[in-house]
Amino acid sequence: MAPASTHGDHFAEVVLVRHGQTDWNVSRIIQVARRLSEEAKPAAVYSSDLKRASQTAQTIAVHCCVSDSDLVIDRALTERHGGLFQGWTFDDAKRSEAYKGGGESLDQLSERLVPRLNAIAEKHKGERVVVVSHEAVIEEICRHADPTISVGRKIPNTSISVVHISGSDGRWILEKFGDAGHPIGDGFPQSTL
Picture 1 (cartoon, helix red, strand yellow):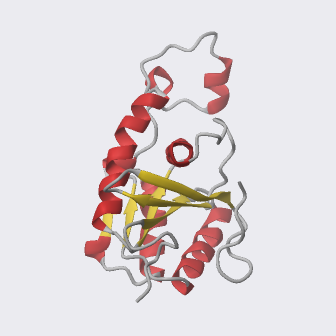
Picture 2 (picture 1 turned 45 degrees about the horizontal axis):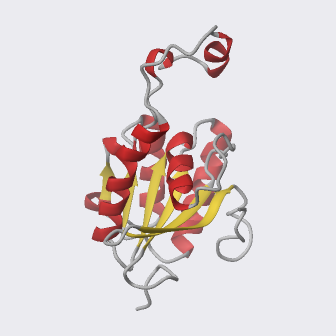
């Protein structure tokens, strides 16, 4: 069997899916799950421990026939901590007079994510895995793979990003970023980089 990554069997293909959230997204989650089930079956589905991500991951796992033991809820994949703004709406935080701190910096977020993704890639060399997480997490993973990605680019709910990771030597290759058009057409659509 050919490796899932087009970069060889020492890479894992990591398909990053931003969680769904609204009733409209439910149908998009099912479309994502069906699309993924038509491609190479993921060896595992990893998810943030937050409800909106874990529910999306469960839907994908069911449609892709991934066993319960290969559905991994992982706190390391949780959303970036917002410090004193944690739990605020974006509009409320935006209106605040000054950033009050206490949250997770991009460097701290990267320090949490990179070793975890390297470990996942090392465990799944030559395989495809799905990671369901949040906008800031996916953006930071993609930015680590390609530092030219600008901070603050919108990543739509249920969009797909694809990174090929060689956990043993730390090479990361970004193939797709924030692709919301995935359910249409054959295979994953062309890169939106």
